[in-house]
Length: 544
Image (cartoon, rainbow, N blue to C red):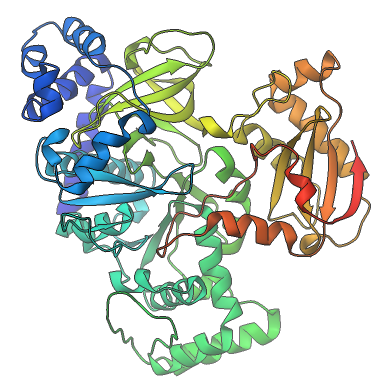
C-alpha cells in the first residue's frame, strides 16, 4: 500500500508539471548544470554562470548558444576518457557503473551512470508505476515481473562495473519496488537464451499472483511463453517436484525451489494432451497486462504477444535508452507517452528542414523530430539519433511515439522510409493471413524499388501475389513519401521474395547477437544495406 501511495504521488506531481513544460524543463536543466559545473566540460563552458540566470528562456538559450549538439561519434574521445577513469572530463561525480549499449558499428558504447543520473531514472520509474496502476487499478495488489538483461559485463579499465542497464536497475530500484518482483536476478545471467527463458517462465508459473509481465521487447515475452511449450515435459516434472531444472550457466550463482504440486502438474499434462499447448490461464491465472515497447518495429509483435498469453491489455514501456528516458506512457493499449519533462532536459531537431533544436514547449502535433538529451550522467546536448513523432498533447506537454532510429530511415529516391512505416504496412497486410511471417526485411535496391524478404521456414507454399499487392498498398498508405515517389514513377512497385529455408532467420540472428544475456531483442525490419537480398538464395518471387 505504501508503494502504491508513493507511485500515485509521483504521478500527481508529473501531471501537474505537464501544465507548464517550460518551467519543468528549466528546473531540470538548472539542476544538471549546477551539478555538471564541477566537471572539466562544465568549467570550460561556464555551467555555473548559466545556471544562475533567472529567466528560464534566457538560461536555456545561453546553454544552447554555448554547447553544440553532438553525436556519440563526436563525443567519443571524451566518453572514452571517462571510461578509462578520467570521469571529471564530463561527469558531475564518479560513475557507479557503465551501461553497455550496442552502437551502429557493432562496437559497445559505455554510457556512464552517475548517482545523479540514477536518481533521474528512479523518479521516472515511480511515475511509470503510478501511471500503470492508475490505468489498471486491479494490478495494485498483484506481483510484477520485468525481464531484464545481464549486468555482468565485467569492469572498465578503472574497475567500474559494466553491463546492461536493465540488469543494474533490477537490482538497485527501491526495495519497495523490488519486493513486487518474483524472479531472482541470477536467472537473467544464464548464458543460453532458451534456458534463460525457460527458467524465468518456470519460476513465474509458481506465483499465482503474477499480474504484470514486462519486457522492453514483446519478442522476449513471446519467447518466454513458447519456451514453456517447447519444454513441456521438463515443466511438468518441475511443477510436480517444486524444482527448477536447467542446464544453463549463470554468471551469478543462485538456487531456487518452489512448492511441490503434483495435482497441478497432472492438470497441465492433461491439458497438453488435449490441446497440444499449455493453457495460459492455468500457467498465469492472475495475469492482467503485458508491458513492452509498442512503437516502431515492436508493434508488429503485439498481437502475437496478446495471443500467446491470452491477455487483451497492453501498456507501453517508457520510451527510453541507456542514455535516458524520453516519454512516460499515460494510457493503456496505446503507443507512446508524455515527454519525460521532469527527468532530463530534452531538445528536438525538426526532421523536415534545417531548423534549430526546439524546446519541449515549442513542438507541433504531427511533426517528427530527433531527440537531443542533456542528463546527469555527463551527456550534454547528446544527439540520440532517434526519431519521434508528436501525436497530441497532455495538458501542455507533447505526447510522442517512437518512429525509427535515424540510421534506419532509408531513401532510394527521396521517400525517407522508416521502420515504423514498413512495420505498419506489414502488420496491416498480414491481418487476413492465417499464418504470419515472424521475420521480414525490407531491402532498398539499386533498380529503384524495395524488396521484401521472407524466410521459407514460415512459408506454407501458397501464392503470395495478393499478399505482395497488399503490402504495396499498405506501404503507400503508411508512408506519404513512398506514395509520392510511386505516384511520380520515381520508384517501381516492390517485389516479395522468399529465401531458402533458414537463410533470413540466420542473417537476422547474426546481427542481433550480444556478448551478454540480453532482454532487449530489437527485430530488424528495414536495412540500410542496398541490394542485401542478393546474399540469399531466392526460392520464389512475387511482384506487387
